[in-house]
Image (cartoon, rainbow, N blue to C red; front, top):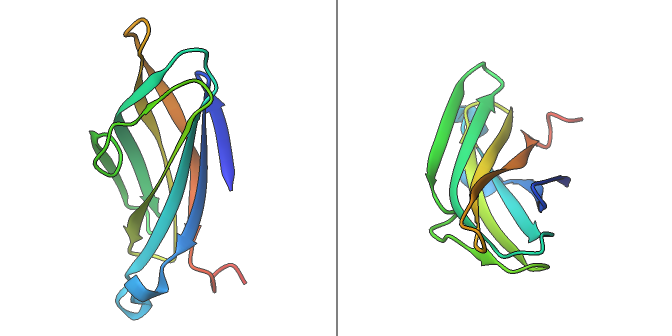
Length: 128
């Protein structure tokens, strides 16, 4: 697991290779990732948007941006956490993701950005 705290919000990421949704012979590698967002601030926050940078080991790069995460825009009071699972498909055995969440301080209505720590997705047999 990899974690990072920025702007008082801790983001932790775990990744999992998904063999049932992958086809290595066709260069299709599916990974799931579980993200935990924890509010360490003294004020409530709301996640509005996400922006992902996705790198495949063949040199390709793509960006994904949109509202919320998995269809919701969670609000977190101080000390609360929110967890979700999503996925990413790659054309190669290894890749990397990083990004930001655009969040709002619900007390003063100020927007701020929270860093999502870079994390790797590696086909299990590649690491041996």
